[in-house]
Image: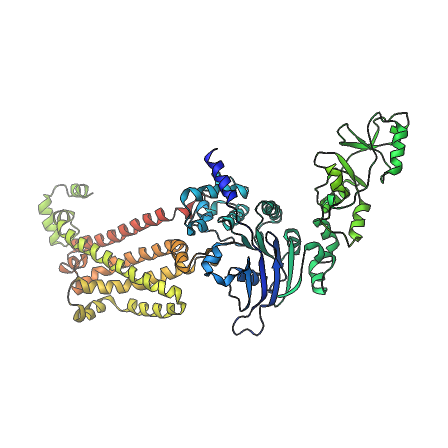
Length: 401
Length: 236
């Protein structure tokens, strides 16, 4: 094993278990203020989940987040991390165990990227070799090249790269909980989307408990396992998984806040595999036409779909293809767009609209046809308010078989 | 440079030329070359007065700035206090201090220190205050204590402004130290005063003071560049 391989193993084996987080009747009132900023806020975040605090400006979402690591003191109530009050330790000790990433990033301009990332490990007294291997591991984790990056100063990196370093720094000592205050807020839309996706991918690996603050409902829906919608005065309007927020807003405030396009937003939450697809009559060149006609009777889509020997779609057949005894290769249109089971439903819809077709063959990760997506299927999803977003469906079964 | 100037005095014998030059109260390179040694002692005293005063002034100003960093309300009173010290005419200060501290460079140093305080204090407080709030917030959020934030983040980031203050303090002090002679503090000022109507003397003593100020400035500039490489790191 190379030294870096050993370090990697150490790094991942040392991973701390995420902790659950509980706000218990938390109130924040500044001396002299007539109204509290946060009022009797209670909610619970299970270990390893992303909880998004969202709301208009002045709703106290950042204040709520900052009370978790005692950057702001709690007036009344308590916040528990893994069952222990945040007041049990000194603020500095508590903060070293809670990752902290903010919109302005706040990298130290006079320190190299490696030294920036090593801030907390240094406070914890790690030795140099361990810090060095951890820096490289983290840079790779956030998709930066360690050799290119570690000795540079923050001013030498682009905004997106700095933001990644900010996340790496927050993760440095492998804290069980991360606080992120609009971490992607200052990034342009294209890079923001990329950073969001990267963070979600990262989160699947590291499974931290995350408190994520944003004012952007789309970001909240995308990033959150649970979303807490706050209104002015720090009052919790609704605390629910994103799909529930969109399907059943608790009140007018939440309904207005999630927006009139909430039905479309729901499509962003679902993958093609989550819905009931139409069935297709898949045929190969040389199949007996009588057999194909029988298949078409049973299929939802009445156009035969030509596939190759590996069940990969080639195209939709024309009437002419079935005139003889056996199927000939006579296509009316190619198998486009091609949708994958893991595609986001919204993206699949967009592909359908863009190619101006009614049907799109859906393939699994091996490229085999597993069904057909149509505008009608999607329209059905939009009207079905009972559909769970993560329930296993026949599509899963098809792929597994 | 001196030999080439001498060459221009061609026909005259150098010593004879000097004599007439001195008699005419001119600018006499020959005389300067012959008498340069007598300036080295006062130059040494001048360096001593300046360095000791600025170092003590820096220590006091830094202590005051760190106190004011924790107790913001003290900043105003400290600026007023050091500002009053700064406004006292230096010659008056040298005379006024004599009954207390006696005649000698002690008196000079006390006065010179008091003149550096305002400049250095203001630059340190400005430097600390100009550290962006989000950087301090990020440091605190990661679990640095106030003292660690000061030592590892705020002071390093204030270094350019602190050094800028020291450069001004050195230049000012070199100039003011020429008046230390009124307190019995010696230095280049005493040479100016002993023969203040002889042009060559005044030019040499004054010129050395200017060169000294420039040398201090250059040294500090080099220090500043070497400790703030991060400020000039080439963008990627």
